[in-house]
Length: 295
Picture: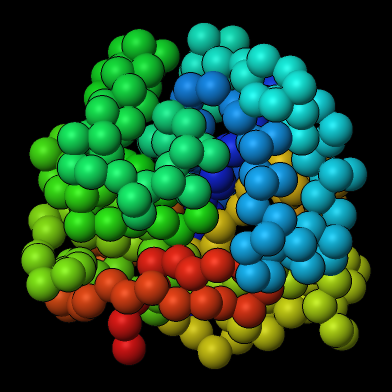
């Protein structure tokens, strides 16, 4: 029987303000566990337009209709508009998700800075960046975070070391096949990885032969082969314009025999974990390179 866990990345002001509660309420009605990972500092996502010359980025922007899905306000945050601080402004909404019974964790402090700069950061800069996220999470939720997942699937030996220093139970920074104990650049790390195993909606939208109406069928075909899977959702997409996709997909998946579990459940059932190396690679539908569980 296939098992599926949902991880929900919350990147922006719009996703936090408008997307997380519809997702949480739908998952609660359907008795589907999910892990919500929050961006906790300034929303400077408007600066992502500076990535326009990165291979594959402009093509993805046009294919996925970024402006309409993320909203004009988001595209101005941190550029023509001041960057709103998400933890201070929306801490009450984040706590409501927790109070609805969902596990929460750290996505980042500054999404733009982590996704675009972490691979050039020193250990001290990486430690400082994550510590700001950890401190804001502690302030919002009144307890330390136990899980994290990096923006854009970007991790480094420095970031994995910082996770170990914070004693996280697990992280989800990678794309891959199944939970594993990571090594990178010749170093072994304690914090296990629970990788995303399926494509994301923004990687599929606009590809030849893929339509919004056909998305449930696409994922059901992928799950029909069995095994454990982690699907990453985004509050800005599945929580807003594509919430209907989940309303359709969840009951159809249950009818097809899919069992919904949490990422933590997938980790527990995978013990003992294999040791796998992380490498950087390109994936179809996503610009740049990201952290991938090596085959």
